[in-house]
Length: 159
Image (tube, rainbow, N blue to C red; front, side):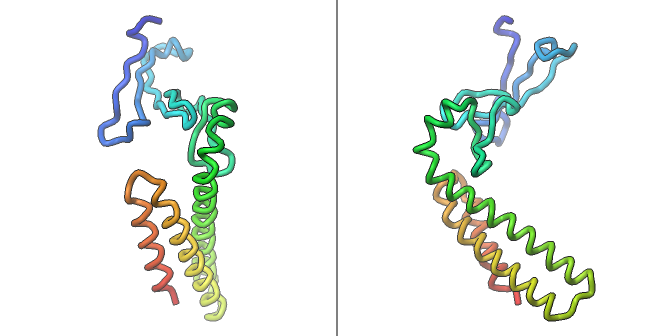
């Protein structure tokens, strides 16, 4: 393929690691032009289609192009990975606790059961607020700091 085989553009308002590339579908086994989203390898910064990058198995937040890149970036990624993994687990706990509250209310459970589910939800929100606060310095935007404040408020408001 010549240089005209790929054309890429930065997505407006998107991160610099996200690109959309127009690829002739013949290169992908089709007959028209197909848009492919590119992401950046956390290890070597190589931009590849998302399907060719594998997530870190522990934190599921960063992508690597190969085992070599993953192993090479492991020392630098290890601290952030633990924080990411804790935030992911805390987020899953919030979702599960919210579902338990909804189930208890919809199922007509006693007030004690609903109160226990709400208390578990408040504890999960507090744990997520702590995890998001720990993650905020590692994130480029202030969105995680806002999450930490919002979940801390939700934990404080829950009965």
